[in-house]
Length: 306
Length: 306
Image (cartoon, rainbow over all chains, first blue to last red; front, side, top):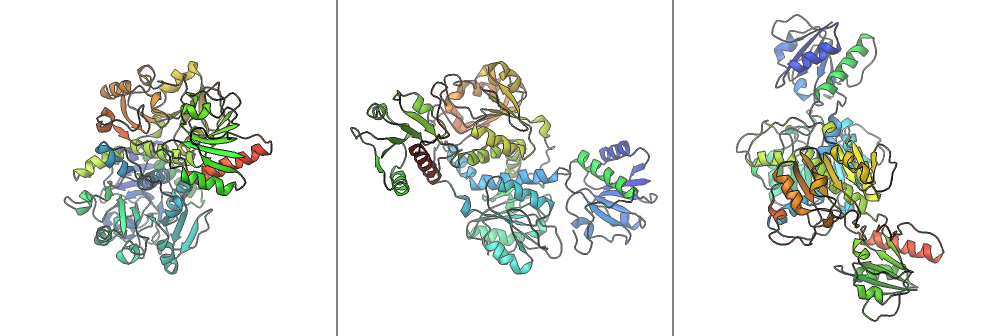
């Protein structure tokens, strides 16, 4: 069995060592052009040339949760695309989103501002009933984030393309129910896959349906957000702030208005990192399952794009 | 039945209205000197005169979790002191502590510092195995905080005066096991009651047993902490930072070195506020239980002081 690794922006050597150690019978290598055909590939944002040279590839393991970079490529018809189920990402996402929600809900920035001036301040505690959290995208990550917020007694509602039944979460489905979902989401968390249907979903028309004072958290993809629309809604005060981990262009360019905006928190696409050891273990177990003819989880539906 | 209210630093009128509405047969009033004897009192840091004038008081309901302010007073021998079981405080405490832990663990201050300079930075993700959380005090609040941190996969250990058996939490008991507890607590969260045994427990001798780089969170009482010892351990780098919600003198005095310290976060005793409606409901249900001769939870052991 031959496994090839083709991950841009990644130190590939530890992936090579880890996969080889776990699968000593396999031939594992880092891809270079004109390499012989592989059975399985471990990739992150590979070039089109890589796919064009691998027409008989059986499996393409994407080492992130979002496969939008792959969807832009021509993938051989017989290749199945597999994304990581979780591999330590969902707890990181829960940490990131809960931190952002609690920071805003408990007004920790306001207290920090007061403390910087040596001021012992009083703020009337906010009531959770006035701060329901709406999650766009109720996949593995969205459900994990929902559970974590529920543990702090937040009211959580979710919106997704297909109907879901999630304990304690009021769910909304499809375009017809988006407005009802938005108008009651005081926090809006975007955890959608990026597809032609979801690109630009965080636009003026949708964001302006949120309650006045709503707060946006985008941890999905930069292309979900129409940047100018967010800035306009912050200017009018309709939105109270935003925490953004993803951007149309990454790294976020020098001089971009998000960097210095007083009500936008920018982090460098750090909400949920791929953890190498966990990911290698998951890929290895899937390769073993496939070689024994078993079904595996995480196979991407190319017609949906996630 | 006569109920009197004697709460300093508190708007007492809504307490009066809430208790009177819930107990229409009772005579509820705000205390003034030389008032007639009451059966039950609802208090926060009352003056000694109040207690001296109420020798036949049956129950003293303290509207906070910590009863240390009461313990400094002479309490009539026949009066039982009752503290609130929870009344919405434990979830607030879980929010506050989880926010502080996640903020430091995920290095959000470091990212904010980089972002302020327009810098897209990379930081190697920290591993939770290196960041166990130790909680001093495993009462209602400590156990709730432990559960919330466990939900994010943190390893949690607890120390308390009496032995406790808490699922998934390694527990340490008494002075003999304090050193073992401290040396493996990379985060130290103080949620102890303030008693003569716990005053100054956060001192040089104890804090210096924490691992290098440890982070302190004090949400109990200011008198648990020897302030100069914390500053010295931050100076040497033994401790990486602290989040403090409580202080020896509150409000924290103007010009106090904590206000401007770059690695200390100061909040104005806001971690867990008494929620009036929940507290009134709990006091009413306890008064009703007592009038029917039932036992109630939250009775303070005056010999222990909590």
